[in-house]
Image (cartoon, rainbow, N blue to C red; front, side, top):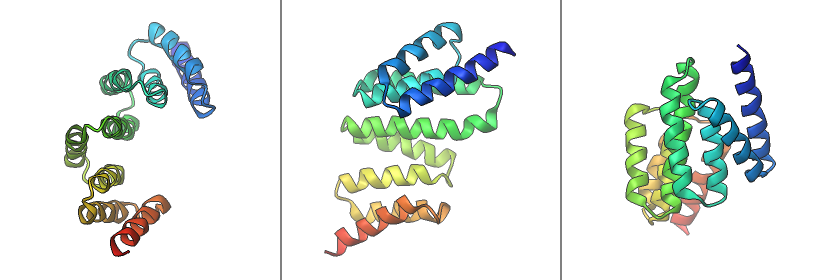
Length: 168
């Protein structure tokens, strides 16, 4: 029980460092936690986010993939379902940043097949398709995202921007 409480406190502090953009402090804390609990999901997850901000993309990918492995070992599978979806979006986003579009789209297609009602996958795919100049396909995907999350202001704004760009 003490270990669980320590893991929760550590994850909370790592998240705090991440929000405050104290990336190196966050990485240090996560490294310590990983030594103590090598199967900890959140230490790899937050360290991956920090490394993404620092543009250490290959290292971030390794951390996110390790987080996915650890999520499958977690005692709370329902909680981990959403967390895993978020990690897969982050992996696709790193590929997008690296201009590895095919890899990003492949990750998203797998995610969509596993979770066809997850709006984040469609939104990320829409962003990539927009980057590629495939605006109608991007609009189709953002509409799917909005279908599953109709009150999401970011999605609605993205759709408006796409429509404005396509019609101007």
